[in-house]
Image (cartoon, rainbow, N blue to C red; front, side, top):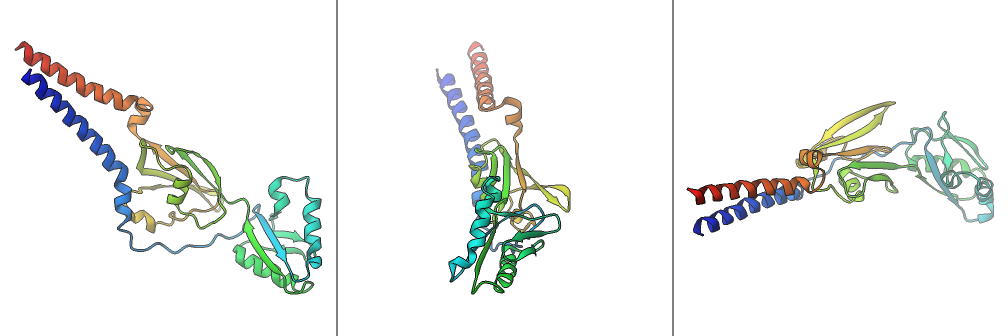
Length: 252
């Protein structure tokens, strides 16, 4: 009886060590993030061909901007994003009421707003223009709780915020092996990010770009056992080993 009790407690100790190890792995990022002293500078996204821009125009005399309202009504049979916005052509231009063709490629949304305001000022008294991207999105896939593609309304989004939109990494996700896929000048590049180390915040990939894709690699246990089967199998193995030792000792 004494030996059985002793080995039962041994089993509990092994189980508790396994649980503690899992917990430590889960909170490792939280402890490291407290060490961060500053964040990297953010480079604003520039407008490119095929982007869709929402352009909101107001003025002291609202009748002067009626062409913009009529233009939106005329496009009511189009895709919703095109109703609310203007698609940037291959030559980097958009075609607006009152002022016609305006080149906006390689400008930030604030610079584009200033340029449109300057052109509208020739025919409208004190126009106010706001520009934002409608097609800004990032995808988060793999071992996260809510994988998918997310529309982003504030382009200044970082990888941690994107993972948050996806419900955070599951307990089976490899925090040391997160892949980020980005298109640069027509070529797709992939980089590996380890968020258990604070130096990833100084990376050029900390802040995301339009159409970035994040993939969280599954752990070996996830691949091998799929789900909780792996944990149950490991516990069962330890338990069987301990019980075998108990039986052998009882027979001796």
